[in-house]
Length: 399
Ligand SMILES: CC(C)(COP(=O)(O)OP(=O)(O)OC[C@H]1O[C@@H](n2cnc3c(N)ncnc32)[C@H](O)[C@@H]1OP(=O)(O)O)[C@@H](O)C(=O)NCCC(=O)NCCS
Image 1 (tube, helix red, strand yellow):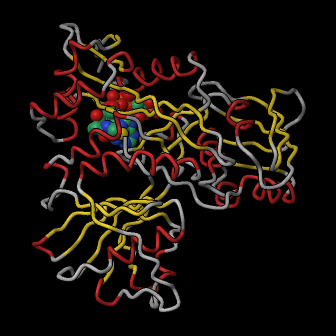
Image 2 (image 1 turned 135 degrees about the horizontal axis):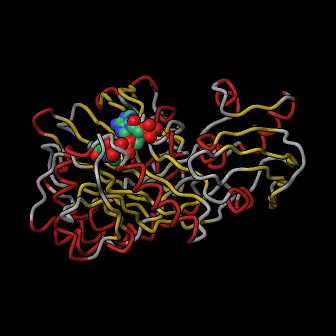
């Protein structure tokens, strides 16, 4: 079937219709106050629309101007693709492909090194060069049986705080946290506003947020009385001590049988704090942020490497044609990366590059999946050690 549609940039006049289109795609009826919030955080200039012959919206894609920490501590601007939807009446006719082509062409023109998104479905974005980069697990903790090890001193420092106080304290704590975590998305007003607005339709029947603060972190949770449960929405800690004391407080909730958390990093030390690590029961594994390189030399030279590495990478990028051969020379103190005509040592699929650079995938699974190949197994091992990060990346913010 052929469908005629045109692409154009959104304006502030489109916001209400965009919200309606988004609500239809994701099954949400936005209220007037949601709309006010949307107007305050969305920049229509960062949105592309597909419209039919009557200028009715049949597809949307947008971006938030985010920043992300890369291994070694550099912070790069990163468009965060968001609000992607196509009308039910226009699906599978190339509307999304057309929108993403235009949007990514613009990201390249603007000189971005990478872009990211969080995906509603896993099968959509690989074809556009994105690969799953961060991961979370959902856990359930039997609160009464989850006991912190006796050798861990209770150093205190945690107190309950109201949302207004958290509004003051959390941005600086989050900034400190994000500076030290690969893959961490730095929050601006467009991320903090919905986070703290705590809309009822996003609470899943649970209470509004409660908060705990510590000089080096904070945690937020809800109570789900019908299930005698507490749902931890985030624990942001810049020190191991803050992490431990926040969890000590979260596990001290009498009247709560189960503590749930949907976003525990795969290498979070929580299980190891307990006398019985098995009490942190994994109930689900999810991919988090997906990334793709837009400027390979800029991205590869922005990070630091675990060991000295000198290799020619051949990046395949059918969607954007931003691949080619690049010589990476890097180490713990810095890196350079330049286009080259030298023969390739390693071939990397676009979908593997973002995850590899941010430390979210190691070479063995990528090689096993045919997404990264090298003739010399010793070089693969060196690449692995060079790209390895001391902690797994965490994005920490949905967008
Ligand atoms: C996902 C969505 C935006 C796709 O829009 P669309 O206009 O139908 O997509 P297109 O026709 O441009 O398809 C582009 C390609 O992606 C594929 N594709 C699209 N949606 C897909 C899906 N849900 N699962 C698997 N593949 C999908 C198409 O087969 C096509 O492949 P090809 O170009 O390689 O042949 C649309 O189905 C939608 O609005 N879904 C509900 C909201 C949603 O999930 N949005 C994504 C938020 S992250």
